[in-house]
Image 1: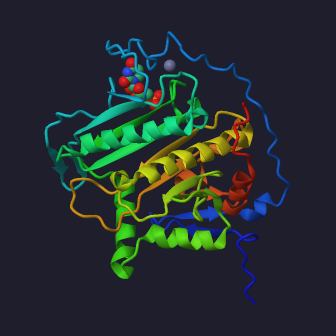
Image 2: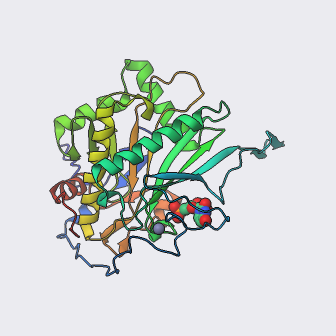
Length: 347
Ligand code: H2U
Ligand code: ZN
């Protein structure tokens, strides 16, 4: 009598990292693929833009001048959301009004001196240089015992609120562990305490067995659409080895991470033949916070596009008020991404 099928019936899926549920409505996509490719015709970017505040040798708004950098370059955000010298303090009124000081530092990471080369267009060896810089930044920022978490991320595309096409990412290091990381820590810890295993290790093993949501993989990393994905083409990159943070990766893993980043972002660009927008970032163990053997390094990609270069998914109404919801299934999205070429459409 139990005819329930994931491909047919509305259902909820559990995000095992956060404990949150997403509503999946697969019956709404019974209609054929309507993903008409609407090319957003944009002139190609110049290799150097005199008006860009991230290009080598140019002045930034804060007055500093960028060096004539040849490799990935980091600087402290001139308009950072956090300040290194915020005094410690807390406000608590009648257990109703609660505020506390946060100190931190915001860094901007230019991926390349070239104004026009996004991650999928960089050579793998050059993406690897970005990884090396992420690692150096991570080490330096975690040397301050007051820093408890380091968020490495990229906002790509104006649709994601990114103001400048020059390929760059950001790092925010904070004196507290942010909410998303508290959730992921507690769910990984619960699993680790109960089984002695990494939650994502078990998850990746299962996904590799099932082969239903894998986008691509190499020797050290898997890119997949998580079973609980909220965004239409949301993906994760998960290391095959259980390591808590970027500092544990070997040279071979750095190279493999660069390789899978290039492949995944190339597939993304090829999906709608556009420079594919997303917010992406690494999640890893908190720093200066004791041992976190439960933590398993991974990256999330949250892309907003749904059907074409110009049609995005809106997180509104029910999603804002009640629960996130999606129509196309994660399995369908994974097959689509898996089938796309790994050579960039513009080449
Ligand atoms: P986006 O990735 O959101 O576009 O952010 C770029 C950052 O660069 C943004 O946080 C900083 C902004 O504060 N910025 C500088 O630090 N100096 C500048 O001269 C312009 C922008
Ligand atoms: Zn530039």
